Image 1 (tube, rainbow, N blue to C red):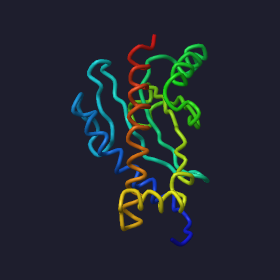
Image 2: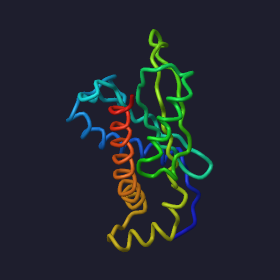
Image 3: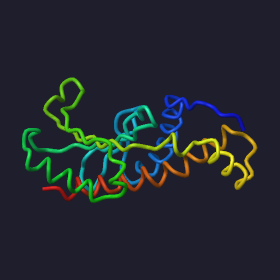
Image 4: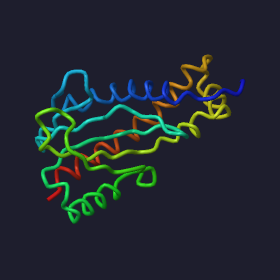
Length: 174
């Protein structure tokens, strides 16, 4: 197989497709909000969670989860407590950043959100050797399908475990 350079923007688009399939499981337990977005209402907490659009970095991609919170952004004690709870969950070593921000929607500036950004090691996952081994093991004949399969096998459990943890943290957070 020839050596190729990864286009992390195209990988982001593929990850977003994978997330849209995962999203279906969440809306079956709640209901979708905003048309066209990957946001869903968690019935138990009555809060809207979302998979934000995946972004590229120098060495891979960022999986971004968002959730609302009801306290002032300036409350550093609560922010620290919330961040600690999030870091107790799955994949803490992959947390790239935790951002607290106001809503970007007009008319909702008084609503606050947390975004947890996880580094997806795309460059490592999609090395030529890994793709070749995966294709051989799974008897896949096309590189494109192999890349999609590797991403799906990695992203599905990663995104589900991190989103499930974020939902639990937000449900229980005081």
